[in-house]
Image (cartoon, rainbow, N blue to C red; front, side, top):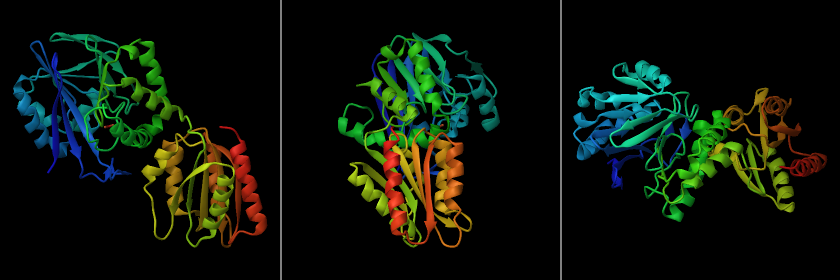
Length: 407
Ligand code: FEO
């Protein structure tokens, strides 16, 4: 049974949230493991003689979405559909809605969105392409459209409802998981939710994370940040108690601001050789008063890559341990690194620890990846089989150099 929330969030103008809780999903974008699930939020506003729908939902939930919409409005009465972003988790139900609407509504979005809607669904009619910063009077409200490219695609924009200080933002300021409330009024709910926001930012927007900071700067320059009273994202919690908080969280993650003492340790160990090296490193870190967060790939354990990526932005430094496997990096770490330097490419120091049987290769290959990325390579300490006393001494020295690097 799919949970659908229909919540009135403002009396004047009449504004509703329709939230679908996706508990069936396992891998967002067929990649990112999210046992915590995700919500798809859309909004409906009645202003004067206009009825405005902000985004839709995933095709899989079109039936539930339309049923919810019909409790609020006759679909033929929808006058405008604002498409902030065309990824199908927000647009998949659009063809059905338009059909029941009789194609009466004006569709509003960026020129980029227009091209994508045509490519995805063959939608070409009645589309209005906005200009960045353009204002439009709809019903009794003034809508300002602001492009926020790469949050999450080049098509993306947000709507600022001027009189109310409401920002409808789709992917931007969203997060994973299915919060037990619709808004940020309960601190416990917010505390539980924020780590899922970080994981969402890194896995979904991480490749473009510099645009998070750029787009927030843009909103600041427009002078509306101080006036925002409510943020209505396409995923997760609404922000109305403290909208500034989600901007600040996005800014911190976008800039990779570290949490004091957090060192991220990731390694594979097939038979314990890399594991022993990590034990030594962890012992040294603890002696130095650091707080390592450890993710281990073994013959009994494979943590989700999406969780690991979510740990990177607020880490001070990373230790990566890998076995050499067929003259390459162990497959689990190889895949992880591929995503790490793509999605979570931050200027943080990295120490590489490696073990091999007859020929070392993983360490050098990781080093090549790291030195080509924004990460700062501290050292590669790779040796044969079980670590010798001398190896252990070098690992301890390496850890001391890592934390002395300055964050
Ligand atoms: Fe929530 Fe980029 O879609």
